[in-house]
Image (cartoon, rainbow, N blue to C red; front, side, top):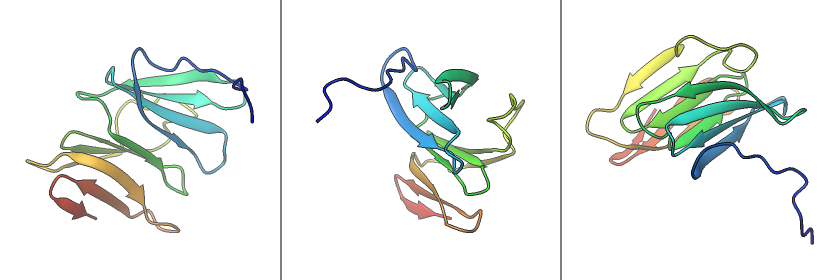
Length: 123
């Protein structure tokens, strides 16, 4: 058993809601209660980019093609090229009126996104 962590990252002010690692293993996304989600270089453990949302993100997940899905409140965003450079805006947005997103998940081998929410599941 290991008693000390190999790396300690102070990613957000306050609790971390979710983390996701891209398929290459090079980047990590983290979401905090402080309404930010950040992109990290896992080779250097340095923050590359920071993005803000209107509510804390509940769920993050990378697709096999490197798209990053972010679910927060009734909002779903898909970010393309958010790791290598600072993206100005989401690639796609989707609203779930009256529902709260709790989990985003990509279908393997296809960029089809499933969303678990307060009223069930949407794809």
